Image (tube, rainbow, N blue to C red; front, side, top):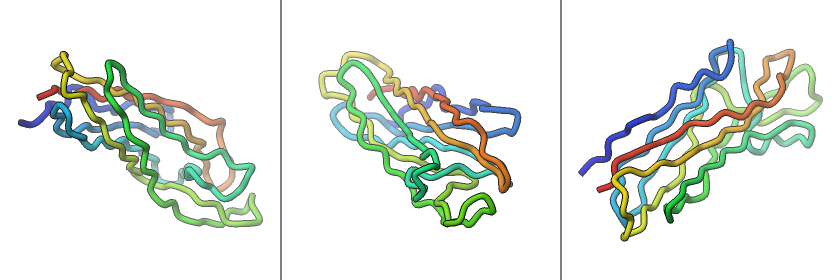
Length: 147
């Protein structure tokens, strides 16, 4: 039986229309379900990857958590793209466009609730070709029915 995604995002992060959204697939007690959170960056904007390759660049970090015994797995970060910018002597590994971050959610077999909620925080630094903005941290709540 499929879980119903009650809320999955679309939070506007700034005037430049960066957003975080997500989805949580079918959730069955005792079995891992795959969850995906997206950081969406408009054209002309990039974010440092989780491993930008330069100690002065702030990496993207995704943290997911839940309560009531729900286990949240390690976040899988996609590979970024190495790009050379005028402000850096070496290439920087960055994310562009719609970037997926995945992890698993496991509801314990004895879970008593009808829904599960996973809170996800995405911390990133958005940049253009010329400037990097102050780091931002935005959240999204993923909620699904438990079967």
